Amino acid sequence: MSLFPTEPINPATRGEYTPRPADGFSPSRIVLARGSSSTAARRRLAESIRAAYPEAEVIEDFGTPHNRVNLGRSDPLALHEEGKRTLVLAEHNSAVRHSTEEGNSCPNYWHFSPYGFCPYGCAYCYLAGTQGVRFSPTVKVFLNLAEILAEVDRAARRLGKPTAFYLGKLQDGLALDPLTGYSRQIIPFFAAHPTARLTMLTKSADVGNLLDLDHQGHAILSWTVNPRTVIETFEKNTPPVEARMAAMEAAARAGYPVRAVVMPIIPISGWEAIYREFLTDLLSRVRLRRITLGSICSYPQAVRLMEQKLGRENPISVQLDRRQSRMSDGRARFPQKLREKAYRRLVRTIREVNAEVEIGLCLEEPSMFDSLDMGDSMGRCNCVL
View 1: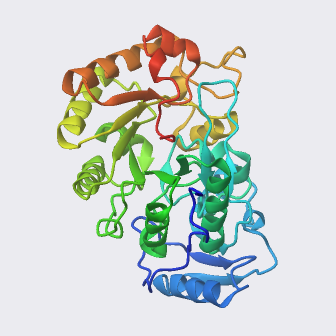
View 2: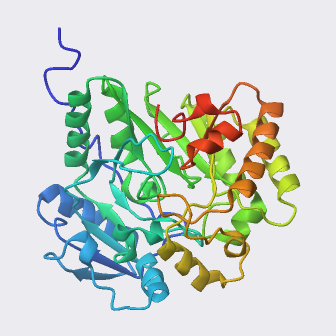
View 3: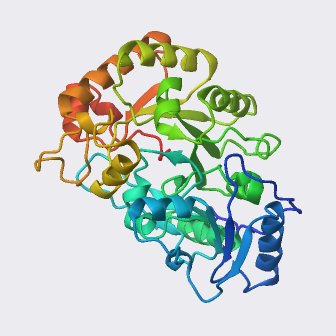
């Protein structure tokens, strides 16, 4: 007997949803790009999203794909800032992919993109240096969710075993959910699927659309968190850590498996005491299944943009290892000894508070796991089951 149902999982919209503005996002313009008017369902969704921002200028650009919208800026920082004020509604016809990290310990994984980029303003944003965002840093909602989930279904059937599909690699997984209500389609889709499982990463504190859904334990929700001082200094226009932890607690009460990603760990003045207090509070409040630690790991273009925002003498840049002999994945990081010291201190605190929670490292080199006696944790990080 086949493991799978004979008919594909139906990812059609389950009921009507009234979009509401997403916290921290007030676009000055909405661009209707290629695919936004190709079906009646997409036109209705685009119109309902437009209604949530009645003051925004609407630009019809139906012939332009989502990653070619011209913002009329050439300076990277001006382009980036203009993109954060621009919402693009479009289609994405290659939204389901398998990651291809090389030169680090990433296990690689399947991911999918109902959104592109995000409205938040983290100064260190690694996405800002990737090719897909660097030239088109707009906030995107892809209106072909049904087709995207159908492709997830096809990929999962080919794989034939429980497999994580990650929402959060190229976007924030929940920041725009108040606007789209996509979680009310995505969570039931994975709940009903025999093998596809959702792993999602967010900084959002708005979980109102998720708490009444029957998720069947098939949706793992993860939050990127950091101490209050780090967030206030480097994460402009993001929910405060207290609000994120309250959302994590609510999700855990609703039965979702909850994870935390502490990334990037930034060794600011007094960081050891700051991170110890933060982790003790987090682990005492939230029932975590796994916690993943990570450092700055940005491509040069993202570092340059960060320095346009914060200046070259900012607390991140002055500690970066800028030698040409950096890791082979081409990302800029803090020196290995500094990263090892930070991981060691944080792991010790985690174990003192909760000896059972799984600990992983994100985008690190294999030798780091050996140095920390964490060889068994390699590949057991946020994005995979």
